[in-house]
Image 1 (cartoon, rainbow, N blue to C red):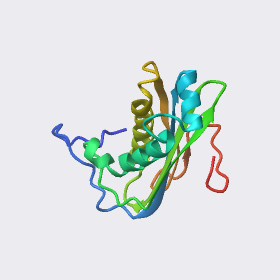
Image 2 (cartoon, helix red, strand yellow):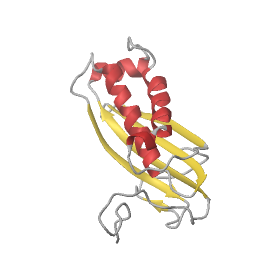
Image 3 (cartoon, one colour):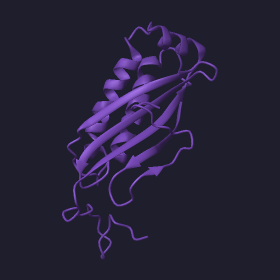
Image 4 (cartoon, rainbow, N blue to C red):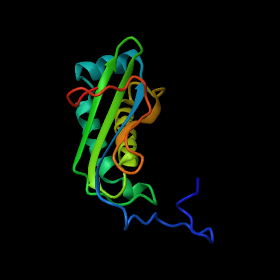
Length: 167
C-alpha cells in the first residue's frame, strides 16, 4: 500500500479528495477509562464536585470531534452532520466505556473525528475526577465500525451490534 500523505519527493501533503464522490459516511469509535471505587461511585451518583461528569465529557467529546482537523495535521475540515457521545458503566471492572459516532456527507471519512471524540471525552473524565484518583487508566481506544466511501462497511469489533441507533 502506498503512503498517501507524501508526494514523490517525500514532502508531506494532504490527500487530494477533489475527484471523490460525496457519500454518507459514518464511524463509531470506543474506549474506556478504569477508575477507583470512589470515582466510579461519584460519577454514577453524580456527586463529583466539578459537576455532571458524563454530561460534560459528552459535550467535550462532540467538541473534540468537531475540531479534529485543528489537532491532526492532515485531516480535512469536515461539515459534520451528526455526532453522538454516550457511556456505559461497568461496575464489576470499575470502568466507564465511551462511544462516539460521527456522521457526514462528504468525500472523506470520519474515523479520526470519532476517535478524537472518544479520546477527548475520556480525557475530560480524567480531568474532572483527578482529585479523587490520579491512577485512572485510559485505554483500548479503537475504531469499532465505519460505513461509506471506497472501503464500504468495516466492523472491527465482534461485540459490535447496531439496533435502533444504540449498541
